Length: 64
Image 1: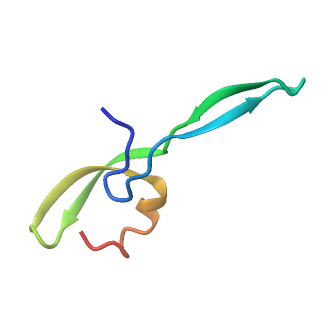
Image 2 (image 1 turned 180 degrees about the vertical axis):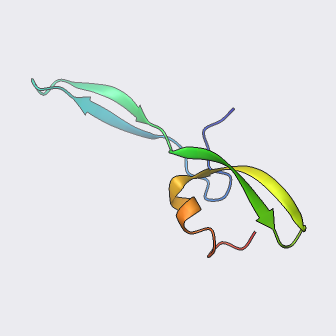
């Protein structure tokens, strides 16, 4: 399963993990994904999707 938000398309981000001695190692920052069951008013049924937590907060703005 891929770690991509199905609504916004957010994916993982590359970054550095910095130690106390300032040694930098590569690190992947994954998206905070949740499996959510949402009522679709267009299809008149429940839909299971993987969405990020930021999209869950603004689902009333996104009309599915």
